[in-house]
Image (cartoon, rainbow, N blue to C red; front, side):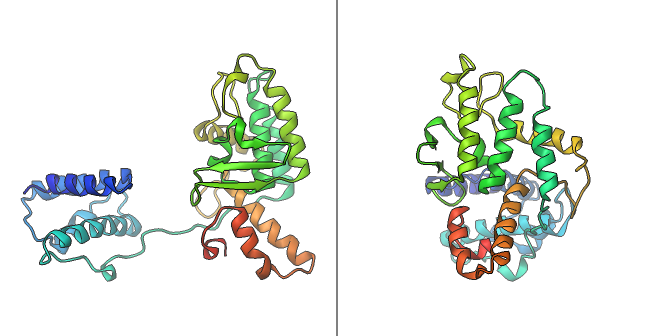
Length: 285
């Protein structure tokens, strides 16, 4: 049987179980094309897998290890079909990812970003206010940027001062209580937002001037403009400061405030972990 057919069958079976495997599927199809071109036969051969893995475009150790890890999942599947087919041992897989230290914004840098957001174009559109409000929400709530831009009108309950975050990374649904000042800012934004006819018919809470809801691509682009404006156009730990670093800054400032208040941070970490949407407290640490 051709490897392309084996990979297709594997992906179909996994996707029936609810796995999307978009990136993994693309990579496995590349492996199948390589294997078919070399007329590879079953059982799976680790030296040939490694040969293909070393063809990763970046050539980095992490990229190579990721390729091996993805084919290992396929090897487990093949083993269920034919017990004589070997499973690639985890000992053969190197480091598959790295966690770069985040950029922690100073108070002055965050205020500068908020101020620069007001100067975005168009000057008389809703985009500057939208981005300004999103940045303030990220700074005050620790939401993931994707969670913020996906908020719908019905997700924002300013009477109770809570946000409903749907389909987040680890939870299908979670409630996020807001600080009073954040509620006031969102109320001010909503009052302006609803003046933009016919934009008020959109179900998205955060709007752009074309009447569509804000998306993460537009938010990232706007922040790139802001970053250049305020002089944050420098790489730290190999990358530029990001929107996501507002979340890291929120967490660090929260822990810092506990220490400054003489509180036991270890007793409060579980509460913080739930608040920011982690399922494993180890992720928060």
